[in-house]
Amino acid sequence: MIKLKVENLSVSYGAINAVRGVSFEVNEGEIVALIGANGAGKTTILRTITGLERAKGGSIFFEGKEIIRQKAYITAQKGIAHVPEGRRIFTELSVYDNLMMAAQRRKEGVKESLENVYDIFPRLKERRTQPAGTLSGGEQQMLAVGRALMTTSSLVLLDEPSMGLAPIVVNEIFAVIRRINEQGRTVLLVEQNAQMALATAHRAYVLETGKVTKSGDAKKLLADPSIKEAYLGC
Ligand code: ATP
Image 1 (spheres, protein in one colour):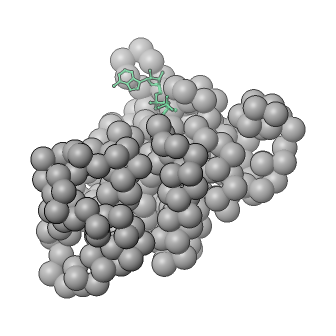
Image 2: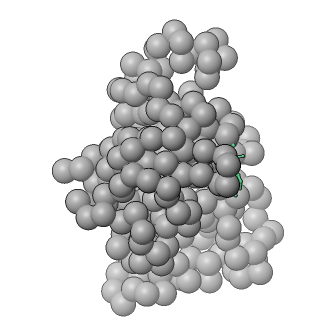
């Protein structure tokens, strides 16, 4: 089943055409990566899917239903969790309160979800009473992902989960992405770290200045000489 289908999407900020006719799809159960340089339009695409930016044209279908003009809170209710760039956690609140806030609309299964998050991120369990703002960058990223796991979402959008993190923490984050995918969530990942994104994803799309220039099996893209040269530094 196609979980998410983006068709001919365009988004502008005034005179800047940030996204120019982008089409891609994410099948249920997949990890799909959007890779590309700074300013390619990756963040804008995720924000438009979630309803935080207005599209100029095109369509976005989630589970077969058009969602392009849907408000962000409805998109969240319908099952899309967005882990934004820069994490956006509540710094004054404890780790536990951040997690519970993400589950506040749920009536059932909250305890099980919390146990699952603590199982995936033992560090968050250890630090559950600590104000979230005092966590390290990597721990804050874990908390942001943990918040997505406290919802009943079936599709998780991750915006640059590896940004600013030490290599060992980057490895941990990508291992977690695989694990949440194995638990049944579909993942759409935006990354500048093309190496890790392609090694983790099933399929990927390469974006350049608002357009898809290449797409396919992630492992094949990882071996593609033009991708290696442009995005993998080799
Ligand atoms: P990065 O990896 O650097 O975050 P990106 O691929 O996510 O880049 P976007 O953040 O989507 O790229 O930006 C795409 C283009 O749109 C850029 O040229 C950016 O300057 C522009 N842009 C993004 N947000 C705004 C905004 N709120 N107002 C004006 N221009 C914007």
